Length: 455
Ligand code: UD1
Ligand code: CA
Image (cartoon, rainbow, N blue to C red; front, side, top):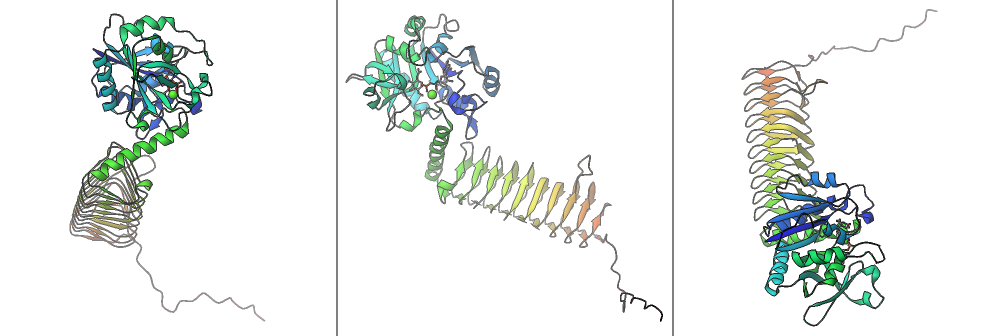
């Protein structure tokens, strides 16, 4: 039996934030969500989350996970005190307890699994994950004998100058024989610089305790401030981007690109500089995205191009070209081989195949058929100040430049709208509609000359 406990009760003073530290986002999801994903991958029998500072907020942020047991630590008196709160909840539990800090979000499931296996194979009282850090400042230092058996952990602030030289650090990830841990937890004292109950002291009381070095020390970065949060984000990004390049995606100038780990890309996608792919986004092979584009929660087919544009919550079919400077948002669907061009905004619009909206248009709450041509500057007036209304345009219809379609309105198939029209009434198939004042020409007309005063 394996239970997992995640320490997530601290405020995170060094973040200087109203938001609890573990709720800060690292990419698309929070730190504590990342920790949960990693430890749930090893399928523990129980998963306990210790909450305290803004407990309700932390709980709510995790409402998407099933089967979590929340344990309240009403006063945050240290990591040891946090684990003490488990005593009543784990009464009768006889298995192993994995303890993870909620602020160590880059840990890989394979590392957790390896820690657990070492622990069980050696029947240790405790096994802790350690790392050799080039800059160990701020972390607890771990002192071992030649067999990796623990002699002592000392917190950074309680270290002598000599002890501070030790670069082997405590990652804040432990595996305990619960019955042994439960025996020593009540013994903890707060006789240290912070006047806190340290979980590391409980580790010091147990024997044998084995330390296992993590292969990639970047995994155990603990996040205490915004600088470390930014460093962690970069590490995560490098992981994600390296994996996509290995999978056949071209990234031009990867340092200027961000790709959230929720994104799916097919081989032979090309991502150009200053492009950001976020949320539940998927992009088909042969597509070229960027430079300078943001794609969020959108699905793009194959051979789509997006240039200096923003696409969110939308779907785009194969072979369509978007941009430069287009904005698709709020449930847009664009069919195959369309062109959505310069300075075009589409909102909640469904566009058929081979339709062009090439320049300077706003189409909102609209449905367009196939092979429609929208002239430059065409606008759907979809909002009457109170409600939004729909515009429908049938196959092969064309709007002249600078036409305004006042919704609700339906134009049939093969309709032509004359340039500069303000169309307010429905138009049936095969019609030309001209809705503008007729041009008037007055030959020989001049400004009346000023009447000269009589002499
Ligand atoms: C801790 C370790 C340190 C290790 C480092 C790794 C102790 C005493 N020290 O230090 O050896 O190198 O992690 O990142 O354990 N928390 C609670 N309740 C509390 C206090 C903290 O739930 O009363 C939670 C925090 O929300 C956080 C985690 O425990 O997720 C770690 O707390 P933090 O104060 O950041 O510990 P460190 O000083 O980093
Ligand atoms: Ca920490």
